[in-house]
Amino acid sequence: MFFKRKNIQVTKIYQNIVEISRSKFFYLNLKLKDNFETRFDLIIFHAFIIFFYYKKLKKGKSIISQELFDFMFNDFENNLREMGFGDIAVNKKMKVFITAFYGRLAQYSKGVDVYENDGDKSLLQQTILNNIYKGNETLNHQIDYFIEYMKENIEQFTGNEESKNLENNFYFKVLKYEK
Image 1 (cartoon, rainbow, N blue to C red):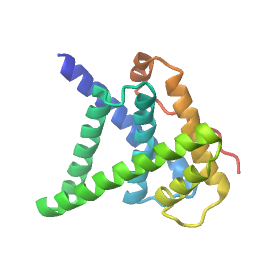
Image 2 (cartoon, rainbow, N blue to C red):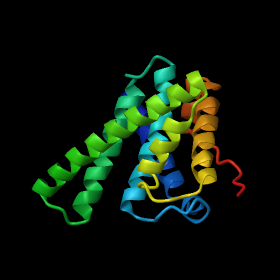
Image 3 (cartoon, helix red, strand yellow):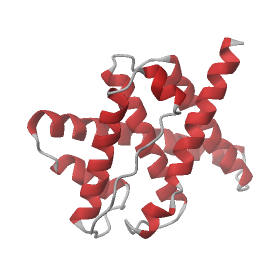
């Protein structure tokens, strides 16, 4: 029973991540390309915020973190299969996804650490530019929005007890966007 309840919780958290990552706000207001790669990167971006929360709690290896990771990559694999990829192609793509995931998590984590410790957001800006905007030219205020969005949601989650975050399925606060 306990396992099933945790699994339902992880499903709700992941659904929340996917829902916010598909929000038209990001594509219309922040001028992101609406494609598979961008949605993947937004899912990773939002998942990072939750994983970073657990890292700050010193519970980086928590059951929720591991189950969220497993659920997320199982969903990626299922989506590839639904798109018609066969076993060999799925295995190759999944290796690329996992490598990309860990690379992005490391970049975001280092960028946030530098920003928190030194007040220098240039590494985080470059990480967002490379991953979310794919190195395409964009306006600084769009990248700064992502930094503020990340910072506010990390602060919101760390300001709550874990039980409250789980109860809210790690609901992300969308900030007002001003050009």
